Image 1 (tube, rainbow, N blue to C red):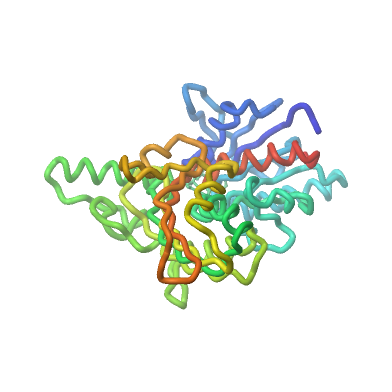
Image 2 (tube, protein in one colour):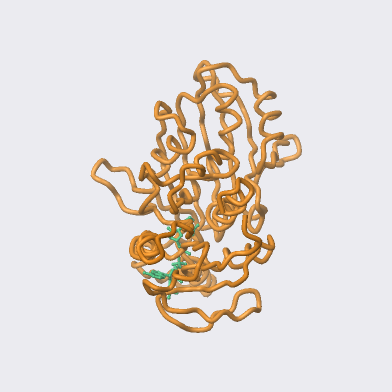
Length: 344
Ligand SMILES: NC(=O)c1ccc[n+]([C@@H]2O[C@H](COP(=O)([O-])OP(=O)(O)OC[C@H]3O[C@@H](n4cnc5c(N)ncnc54)[C@H](OP(=O)(O)O)[C@@H]3O)[C@@H](O)[C@H]2O)c1
């Protein structure tokens, strides 16, 4: 294990900025931190000015750990190429890329990792590690202890996803439309961000529609859940919805198990599981809120109750900060876990 690393963050939008913040907050040992994006310019994060550099093929030659938060094009063009270039130029495989995009998540030789759930997958890495989709991460953190105890048969999930999950621009769009309405105007839309007003609407449309009527976001939840939990027999169906909330995703998760699991046992397992905070006190109107999860690290779980329509079933409400646990924090926790395992 090295004592410090030359770190690159690619992208300084919603996720990239959060990565820079979390590297500082968690004292990740960076001997240098370079920030790349499409164009060079100064950018300020938490009062510190970073001189953003334009990303190039050679940008990663002197880097040990590259955290990609630049969208699929950046990851496609530069992440894998940087690994290939490093091997070709130096003969070494000593660059690690942790990639937030969708491009490589389902590649069999790319581990898709949530450190609380499947850290052992890191052992077989070949340089590229994929960070799962935000809505998948928080769900599998909550489901892992229940799956270990009673084995999941089927999941039905509906998401309530914040605009920050789309981009920094989408946050501005919701704010702008809210101000339009407060000023007595119709909300003005930028169709390149959302096709309809996000103010006043829940849009059942995240990422593109596929031929079978599902969205790509829904497909990601289905495929990634199976890969992370290491069980292709789990049946998953999803409806993913963008809601007019600034930050943090909520999910209604219905789970059917092969084996019995009492609500009290599920509460006990969730309360003891890493990365989870249980807020389940309906007598006092306490359940996880998106506004409380925003800026926090854990996955919050509540509204636990039996699903009496099947033999062994539970319903739960799962909330987490999609920019932190759903993206930047999970990526940095992967790097921390790799250090702990002697892989970085
Ligand atoms: N937001 C979430 O909750 C979330 C969760 C999980 C995963 N992700 C994934 O994380 C990635 C970033 O999302 P975001 O929400 O941070 O997006 P964003 O706010 O739109 O920011 C994108 C950043 O990436 C840079 N970029 C775009 N294309 C690039 C390229 N070809 N080369 C280098 N840099 C490039 C942009 O550069 P300029 O500033 O120069 O334009 C910008 O700084 C995406 O792959 C997204 O799917 C997001």
